[in-house]
Amino acid sequence: AASAARRYRTEIFSVREFAEASEDWFAISVMRPQLDPPSEVVDDEEEAPAELARLSLEADAMRDRQSKTSGGAAPAEWDDLSNRMRLALADVGIASTASLAPASVSA
Image (cartoon, rainbow, N blue to C red; front, side, top):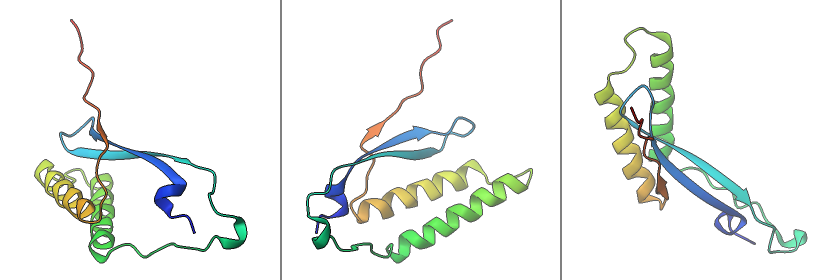
């Protein structure tokens, strides 16, 4: 069966949050035509690695806290989570493919 990597073309962009200096990512994926006949395609969905699942829950909790409290999360907390998330994703072969720098404003 075709792997997910062969079924999709994905670009992962590293961006800076507009209100914070912390890094964020967004992904754009385009589905490619299937290479295998439909009768041979199997469900190859896998569970996320435990560390990524844990970090995902941590990120959800931090976003929830940010939206419900006036203090929210400190910039250092976002930077720490961002760094740990980037390293954990790299451990499973996921990395930013492009970086978008903020546009400069001319006077």
